[in-house]
Length: 334
Image: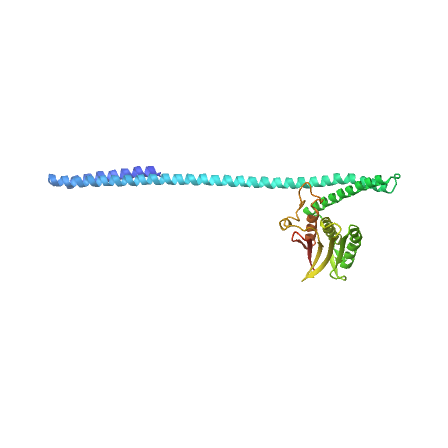
């Protein structure tokens, strides 16, 4: 059976009192044959001893009570602290779970929204472009020059919207890891010859020099030809926007560095400031975000290019001093 500290203290006092009474009885018997002065001295010693015992016992009991109270308070504080910690951890866990659920819902909503918006935007473009082609070829009757120019403006903007929709779809597929790749053997000579034939004459019309410098015309590599061309098209179209009018220069090619093949697109444009280069490959990033910016674009081309290059096992980077042109590099292991 357990006995509390207070009961132990009372029992201690009873024991001490009993000892004092017994001591007094023994002293009374032992001083029976002594004279009055000797009896007085012996009784004085007895009283002093009794008082000392009582004082010591009282002090011990007080300390015992204080110690118990201190332990009780410490235990209570520990309990409160443990309850506070548990509540905090539970709250943190609930917040984390809620945040994860929220992020998942946001991701699902974003994916569903992008799929819906691209579908809804793309649907009306098909007849718009179809009718533009029919009107330009006089299938619906003859049109004059002013009407032809208006139709060409409609067709141009419809194609821009079509490109934007395609970019949004590619970004979504890259995020979901659903962008398809077809790896084949491709000839660098053929690849750069196609680039040259597609861009040289077009750029000559705006007085922009275009050159290609393949590392080795006989070199054959394994990659996705259409996706690699998509990256080059993005980089070249970006470069065209920033080269000086009537004296622009664009150079594409590849070099070998150790066991890596490095493709590049180089221009003599206005360059990209150092502080802007870190965020250059983020989605929807624009170097000039002002409402009066003269150069258009969705800000998706470089993000898509980065995603494609990395999926093909490469690394894309940019080099510019912010004043005299820009060079984009794509490094692939051989």
